[in-house]
Image (tube, rainbow, N blue to C red):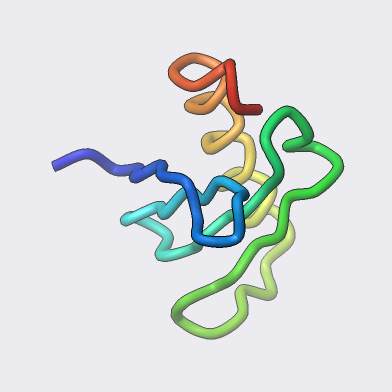
Length: 70
């Protein structure tokens, strides 16, 4: 089973679901760094280092596999 699911959202943006951390990231195509919004599905995570690690892994995955939409 893949860790990440990437698909277009109904609002015309893109969304990524991370099965491991159970977060959803939504962004506008071509503007990932400027428009990303993170939703924590299991409450909020208060550990900044953990959030930074998750976002680095997500960014690495998107850059490697979906460069055209970030």
